[in-house]
Length: 241
Image 1 (cartoon, one colour):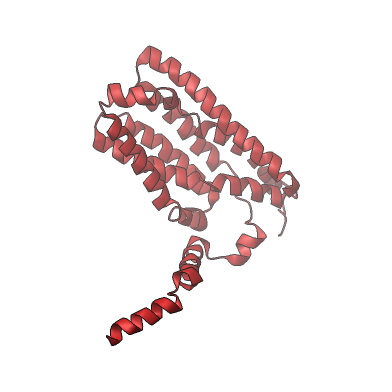
Image 2 (cartoon, one colour; image 1 turned 90 degrees about the vertical axis):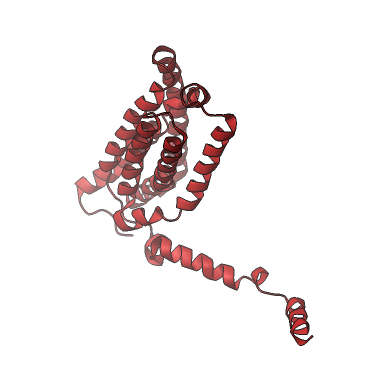
């Protein structure tokens, strides 16, 4: 892989790792984590069945959007994907806290799912390819652990702040105020330097469409998906009778 040619570009790639750690910290500073059930029950007036239904909807949307959101990173770059994810997280928080109605919550959970899938994997790919471009790929394990530590720190700090905010202002305000760190994470992402893609990824090309078509082809051609000889024999006998 070609190394960055200019010192400014190299300095930008070197700075990606600490920026990504701070970005991960902000993305997971979700103030609602400490008071999410009181938020749903007291302000949202939801039953536990509705709460569980919302979380099921969120997981379903994450599953459905994981591959399509990869098109953003493939077409516009990982930096844009992470930035858009941060801004959508902030927007989803504002939508969630705007009006206590189930339909509003469903829309907000959908936005949260799209935002999470836009960020998922893209931030780690940025970190790894930045290290690779700077000749520091041997540090990848340590850097990934650092990113995970920043995530856990964000969860802890967010929960503590959210609990204080809820006790003073009410359970709605942590949801609204968490839009601040989440939106800030999007701004930080815009300041990242997009690194060259890794050798394997660049050589394969095609992005998520190639991955999807390859998976479908493998599924069709897998031996476990093909009818067994006994099945074909029974089918012929059935047609003959």
